[in-house]
Structure formats: structure tokens, C-alpha cells
Length: 183
Image (cartoon, rainbow, N blue to C red; front, side, top):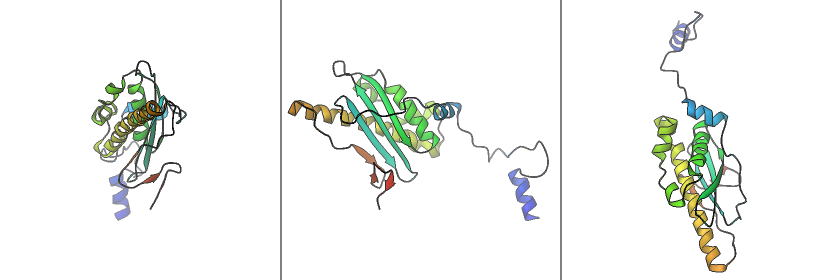
């Protein structure tokens, strides 16, 4: 009796043409699905290139890790290319993909004004997935910070020196190479 009641409640009874209850249907917005199925700008640049800024952020609570890289034209200060690699859910991948599209062709100051709320609104992310858009915003800021740190070192020495990794982690430290938790 209990089994039959659960099946009916969940919509798994033997009756045909019966749909799942609305409470169980949770669909992603078509933009999330599009960016997940056809992600834009996947890849990576040489992290030692002085025109490349790398932002690496992670959220151990959900397991998402995002690396976003920007390539900047030194003469104009515009971001000429961007790419990402993300280990995480569909919303994290979609947020990364949207972020790389939005930063291309913009000045460094402009990309710092991109907020997670804009990304979340564009993708129609539910409240439980807002952390994905926060990671994308933080990855953009970290990439800009990394690029500016490289420029500062380049200006002091006259040649590109290796720069420490810029990494934001919530709230535990991640090993960026292995995408595993360090306990």
C-alpha cells in the first residue's frame, strides 16, 4: 500500500500518459543547456605569457573549480581573447562560457564591472546555483589581478618573471593541479 502510494505521488504508477508532478520537474533554462552542450572558448593559454592573466577559483562545498584566462593587447589594454576550463556542474560550465564571451573585446576596467547577478540573470540560474555565477565573477577578477601582477613585475625587471598563482578558494584550500581537496 505504501509502495503504491509513493509511486502515485512520484508519478510512477502504471497509468499511461501520466506526467511527473510539477514539484519534481526542475529544468535548466535553454541558455544554460546551450552553453553546457556547446561551450564557447574552452581551452587554455600559456600561463607564462606576459599578455595572459589566469584566474583560478574553486568552491569545495560543491566541487566546482574554474580556470579562466584572458589575453590582453598591451597597446590598447583590450582583452582580445579568453578561454576557460571548468570542473563542475552544468551551471558552472555555462557561467564560465558566458563570462568568456562577455569579456572579449572589453577594456580591463570594463570587465571588472561584470557582476555575478548579471550572469545569473542572463542564464536564469535558480538560487541554489548562484554560487556558479559568483565563481565566474571571481575568476574574471582573479585573471585581471594576475595580469596586472605580471605587468608590474615586467615593468620592474624588464622581462617576464614567473608569477605566483592567483587563486580564490571557498572556504578550503584546493590543489589546483589535481582538483582534489587538501585536508
